Length: 263
Image 1 (tube, rainbow, N blue to C red):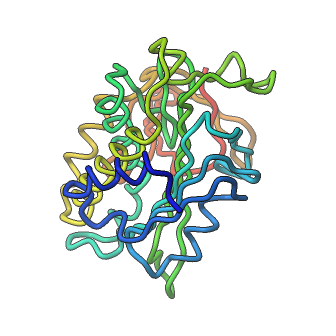
Image 2 (image 1 turned 180 degrees about the vertical axis):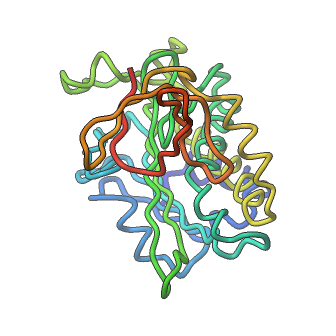
């Protein structure tokens, strides 16, 4: 059963949820919300959220620290391949759109200013990470048909592992007070619903413009791995398909995936 405060917040936001929250499942503890949502991939807009994850994960197999009741751990089933215009581009921009939506939803729910986005999937306040996104697609033939967008947001102060303490933050840490997790859930889902509508309608420029306005550390040095070894360059923005643009020796190159670090 969905806890009362969450059920009420979702109900209050229902007129703004569009295609989302067609089905909602809650777990006090779960292995991974993304795994649970993947089992509901036939239900566009399905939402899974939990108080804690025991097998939370980020990109490229990294562990996502998911302690009980201090964060928000959510996964949503989207079908950007149904976009009316350029469905392949809609799929490629799903993580970008989700980042914009989460920043907007957090700001509306908490009044926390200046939530920034770091390519490809992180939310930052200042130099510290506030949240992250893991988008996992399932293929139908030779194309990605459904994308499960999972996100984790640090809501309350928590005893983070030593290797994370200097690099992460929470909404409570930034504001000096603990926000309502239910309100953050409702507002991030409402914002995601709006940006999902943008994807499906082909309003890609609106998404890209908003992401660029929130870009974290533009001009920073980026390092990434290639078959020839580690390369470095200056981050200069993102392309219209969401690829990271990096200037190397005066030439702008595209990065579409892989392990990227920023200094």
